[in-house]
Length: 327
Image 1: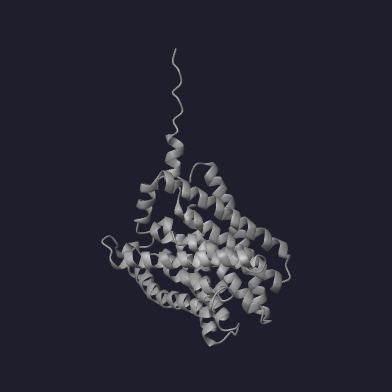
Image 2: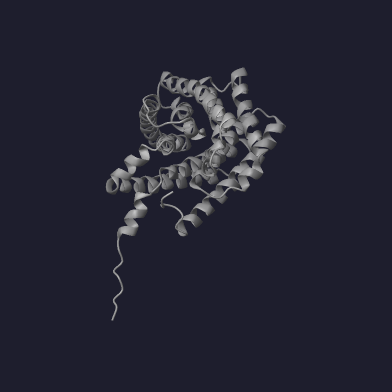
């Protein structure tokens, strides 16, 4: 009589070994959606409860994913080291610190002390990631131009997020420090990434959604610039916003290309950049322009629909065993 083979625990451990760092992009997108809805409550008169519920969902999401990755670090330290050495995945580690900064922004008006704690940890951690990642770029032995993609903006240009909440939590000089880093290296990295896009082979399908990350730096820089300058929409603010708006239009004109793509975790790259341009447009709508009010409604509807679809597709992928598997 044959006895069934005992179930091996290795399957669970194997899946944990492939717990992906890009999952933190889901927190970035959800936090961005929460901030957008909270801003829409002030500008468009929408129910504030939606934004409040979303900020708590974003926090719960961060805690769950952080616990999962900490378990991976404890059990599969070599897998984490390998991921940290990967020329593409390395750039998603700062999504951890950016998630903390965005959560700090979301909670700043309801739990300011808690938000300040999140901001302090997020800002310090992001500075560490910036130094580590830039050091790896400078002293590398493995990078090639084909590795360049918009995800490279995350570790360095992510510094422009710090002032959004930072002006209320620390001396302004600290926010200017982070803003300066993000703004200057946005220009540097934009040149490199555009060179790669214009003169080399197209991005692989898995990385194509990261093109949306191009929207985020000028959109967030616009918001941060206003925070640092007392809310005045001056000429430089106009430039930053219009660049972000043009990039949004450029990508929208190629929407069919993105609709045809298969789902990857990198598809979450749609989320936070759309949230950033939506929040920036809500700020423009505060000036009373009917055009920007209408555009804000449109972008908020698109953002909310995209986040809903991404969330449902991610749950489906998790139930189907498509996540936490070797790529």
